[in-house]
Image (cartoon, rainbow, N blue to C red; front, side, top):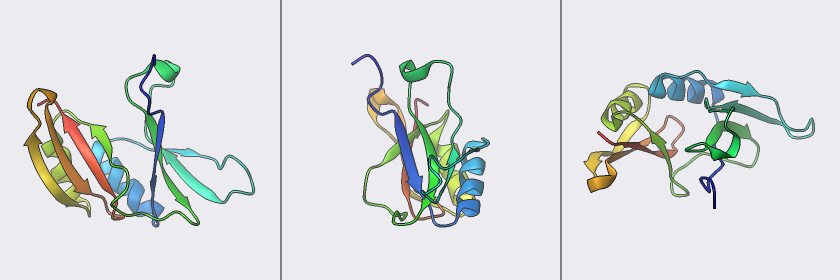
Length: 131
C-alpha cells in the first residue's frame, strides 16, 4: 500500500449549523460546502480543510460533516482521530463549545498523547498530538 488506507470519513449530524460552529471553533478552521453528488440525494455536506494538491499520497484523510436522512449521530461506532498540536487544547475547546470530555489527555507512550471528546451532536471523536 502506497498511501494511508483511510481516504475519507463522514460525521453524521442532525443540526448542521450547530455542528459546523462546534468543529470550526474546536479546530479554528473554516468548513467548505460540498453540493450533493446527485440531485435525488438530499444531503448537506461540509468538508474539513485538506491538501487537494497531493491527491491520495498525503498524510491523513479528508472528511466532512453530513446531514442525510437515515444516518444519525451517536457514539459507539468507528472512532475518528484528529491530529492537533496539543490535544488538551482541543479537548477544552470541545467542552467550551457544547461538547464534553470523555477521556482527558493521556500519554500513549512513544506514540504521543490522545483525548476523546463527545461533540455537540453526541458523536465521539478522538484527538491526537505528539506533545
